[in-house]
Length: 216
Ligand SMILES: N[C@@H](CCC(=O)N[C@@H](CS)C(=O)NCC(=O)O)C(=O)O
Image (cartoon, rainbow, N blue to C red; front, side):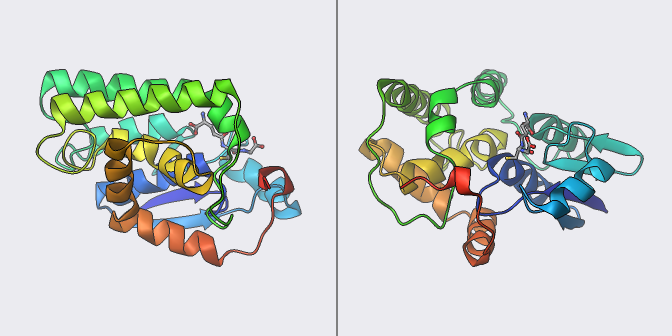
């Protein structure tokens, strides 16, 4: 039984990745949700997270406190769960794409916080955000074109790379960012993935407000 520690489902994009990874493992888990920017957060996060960030996966005596580390640990523990594509070339591409997501796209992440509850409305954005969007669309197109023919996701079947980009799908939708038909088709596949749907529906019911993540 794993414990996954997360922040608000409406806002916490890194938590979404960690939680989707636990779901993809198929293993039983319990969830600890600590709302961001609350007194409860200040009081409790140190009990779980050495970095005071979420997500955190607790696996027996092991504490794993970063989304990509959680994915890698679960991929090791559940080799048949399909976290990474079987084909070595596809796997190398998927790992690179996931690492690029983990370390990059800072303009998009800074300007367009994940917020499922925000009414969908076009947000005028800077060239920096536009460059991030173009790069992501190119990366998605390459993955789908070269490795994703056997299914609707980046490498065909749902994988770690889709988990890493799931919050981006939400951001592209919420802020009406300019995407092409191929990207839209991929976004719709993610938006219909059952684990993503479950998280989004729970996020939509939350009532906590994080003012810095509310963009008009
Ligand atoms: N690199 C980390 C980033 C984790 C992160 O920044 N999480 C945010 C929530 S989405 C957080 O915990 N923010 C609270 C804080 O920084 O105090 C990962 O991949 O898990």
